[in-house]
Length: 108
Image 1 (tube, helix red, strand yellow):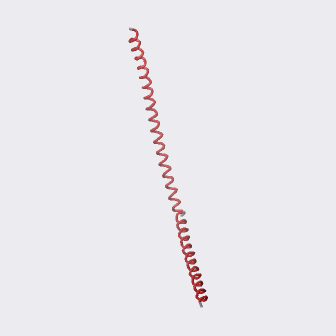
Image 2 (tube, rainbow, N blue to C red):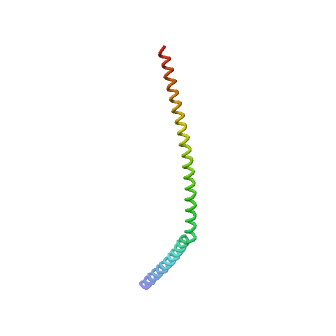
Image 3 (cartoon, rainbow, N blue to C red):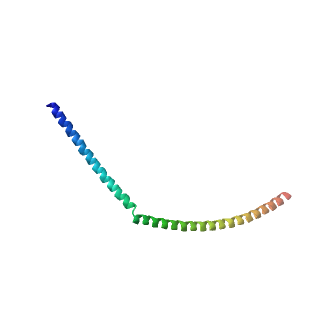
């Protein structure tokens, strides 16, 4: 009698495990189907076209920004070159005036 009860309990446990495994397999299939739908949705022609348009727009904006940057850099370099030329000229004048000053100072 105890052996028969033990066998029945084992059968119930095995049956319960089979049911849970079947539920798990079914839930996994559902999750896989949902994932597949989402993947197909994200790879749809419409979404690919949207991504292409955004990429083209981004490339255009980037090109414009680089052109602006290039123009601004060119202007800054021109200004820096002018300032450097002015500084060089002023440095020459200061050097000449300093020489004259020290000549006069130490000649006396």
